Structures are given as structure tokens and as C-alpha cells.
Image (cartoon, rainbow, N blue to C red; front, side, top):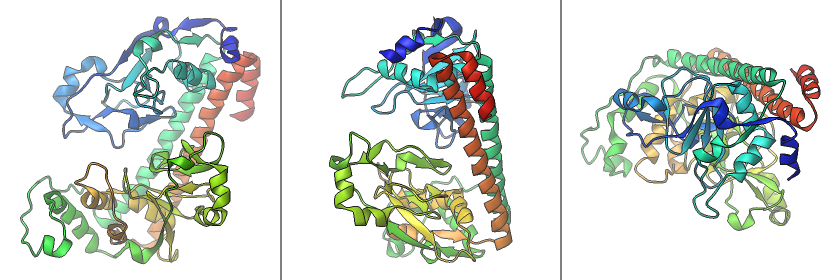
Length: 437
């Protein structure tokens, strides 16, 4: 392969020879605690995301001391068809470990951020793809294979590593602005230090339970859900159906997925509250052509809030540009009815906050595959704060997203610099870095 021929024009070393540790994670015992155990859903595109993690106790954390993560570790997914090779770089001192579907690389004789950039580059991606085993069944990647991955030694490793570090620093700044926006919301509502009840039992009469909600599952009536709604409705609020127009998309079916380039088809797994990813699926040109009027109608426009009702329910993302693609039927489209009363940036943040997430947990809980009915979503209770405060929140959110965009740009520069240094020379790569950063 030409790609690998180019790689081996540079001096290479085995990953194991420049690392103090390359291994697979354990099978920990999960518990209701606050120490994250990272899985495949917590890493992607070089980033580590601690949201929606599994958790372990302090004692389990100490029992698994050798699997405790350190700054500079690179995590990589080892299992799952279509999920292998997702990468995350640890820059946080937070206590955490990783699960059995994750491998860890801990460089010790080379710039760890450079190693991360190489694995994320086109060369590293192809090397990881080559190590997949399992065919059409459960694909896997082994720690043994990772140990034998060839890492090119370049003259600009430090410069590339510095780009990764800067990218992570700016991403942390982005998250700080977002958390500031959340704190303003909670402070306005008097909920900054709110801790919901952990009591699993809440005694209800038949009239108060099934007679009112038509729900028999006991989990639905937990006190914490009552408490959060009660906190919201004591202040200015409204139901979602009164704030937005809600529309649905379609499910074309897997038989219309394209093996070649087609129309991007966004599913719940292709976005989170911080942004969109390149969708894994695209729709065939023939399907798009035969449904062109419907497709154009379904393409979400700037200002639309994407809101998931299946899988990871209640995830909201505000489109800042028209979307050249369509979404799956599991994603609702929300359009603000009156932006003089509620700003889209504010509503998106409120929907992603624990104020609405707990309502999603209450309504959609009790099933293996989470499903939040549209009728229930329409009745979600949303707090409405002073418009001046909403504008402050909107500005913080937009600054957060601007910084995130810059962070992603620097990450792309680092990957491109790796590729240029291998395909041409370090001098060309250095000029590229200087011209773009």
C-alpha cells in the first residue's frame, strides 16, 4: 500500500518500545458513585468526555490502582463493529479508570500528545483499521496489536504535540464558558445547590398515580422527579408545546443507506449537545431523487433545535447553519415560536440541563431501549427566566461554541502536520503550522 510505503520512508519505532504501558481495561464493578469508568461512548475524535459515564466506588478505584488514568494517556476503543479506533486523550486530573472495551497507551519516551495526533491522522487511522479482527461479527482490536504499531519519529514532534495541548486548553475554556451559562440558569432558579432525594419509595394513591398519569411503573413516581418539577413550577415556566413548533423526520430504512457518497443522514449517535459529527450513514442518490420535495422540506434550517426522543433521549443541539442532510425519525425538530420571549440558545441549554434531563429520565425510563413519546415531550416543563439573563446565557453559550470550533481547527492542523511531515518533509509541515496557527 502506497500509504504505508510513505510511512516507512521515515524512521519508525514500535509503540511498546516508547511506552511504559499498553494494555486493555478490566471488568470493574459499577456502583452509584462519582468516579468515572470510561467506555467507548466517552471517547471520540481525540477527546475524552466524562458525561454519561459508568461509575465505580472509591474502594473499587483503589482495587484497580493499575488501571487509574493519568494525564497524557491515549485511550482507544477495542471492540464493537464500526466503533473500533475511537481515540481520546486524557488531559484531566480527575479520578477515573477505563473499561474492558478500551485500551490505554501511556507513552514514556516520546511526546504523548504527538503520539495521539499520529493515531488520529490518516496514517494512524489506517493502521488501526488494519488491526481489526472478527469480520462481520464482533470486531476487536487487541493490546498486542497496538504494542506493535509503528510510530514514525519526526523532527517536529514537539510542535505537533504543542498544537494538541493548545487545542485541549481552548476546549477546556469552552467548557468553562458553558458551565458558567448553566450556573446562571441554576442561580436564577435557586437551584445551584439543589440535590434531589435518593429515596426510592414514594407512596401514591391510585388516583394520584395511574388515575392521573396512566403509568404503573414505580420508578416514574420517585420523589426526585416530583421535586425538580415542583421547583420549576413555583417560578415562571411553560410547557414545551407552547414554546416551540415540533416536527418529525422520517426513517428511510437501512435498504436506502448508500455504500458510496450520498446525502448525509444524521442519527442520534451523530450528535451531542456540543455539536454534530460526520454521520456514519448516507442515503442513496436514487432515494433522494425520488423523494426530492420531501427531502428539501425535511432538511433542518438554521435556528432549529435537534432533540432526541430515542436512545440517548433529551439531547438538544441548536443548528447555527442550515443542515445539508436530514435526520432520522428519532430526532425531533424544534422551532421557537416567539424569540422575544425565549431565546433558542437559552432553550437549548435548559433542555440539556438536569431540569429537563430528569423529566426525560422519568418519562422514558423502565425500558431497555429508551423511547420518549412525543406527547410526553410536548408537556415538558421549561423554566422561563428574565430575557436579559437569557441574553447573557446566550452570549456565554456562543463564546463556548466559538472556542470549541477553534479547538477543533487546531486539532485538524496537528493531524495535517503529521501527514505532511510523512508525505513530504518536516520543513513543509512547520510552514503549514506557522501559516495556520
